[in-house]
Image (cartoon, rainbow, N blue to C red; front, top):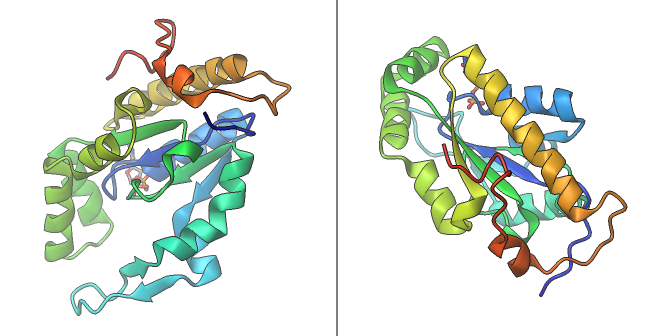
Length: 204
Ligand code: DAT
């Protein structure tokens, strides 16, 4: 049994660079009033990224995950955060309500990363990451299966549909957890409950 004080859910939007995490997070934040917690901004603001030693990729930052968690833990306790980051297993499951793994078809992703100016090595590493479903595996290993949902992001119509689906899920979550908040919730019983009306229940 654990106590949950948040009255708005925390949602991770994760996936390989270029799949559409930021686009989804921004649209979702505009539509729901939840806060877009862009981890890149947190890393910059608190200066918690060390430059990598890779001469081909000097801009990549190695992030101190403990310090990162220290910086955002209060926000996560408060709830209502849309966490936008290309990793997910560092966030404690007790503070997470939904994990969306954004996916993109190879050819489309290749073109997006090329347009970003990625060099061949970095481009191939990211393509491999998507093909090997690295983020999906990471999410499934770190969180309960019912919390993890895969969302395709190749067209603008898909962004709209995905955001609408998450919006509906948020409404249901708030209904289930009581608008007045500060309600004690038995986390396991929440996880055991399978609501067939839940838009995230039917996995994509
Ligand atoms: P990420 O945050 O995962 O790195 P992004 O949101 O910055 O990705 O998107 C990368 C680029 O692809 C950006 O130019 C917007 C575009 N894009 C993302 N998802 C899309 C979609 N479903 N339809 C059309 N364009 C999309």
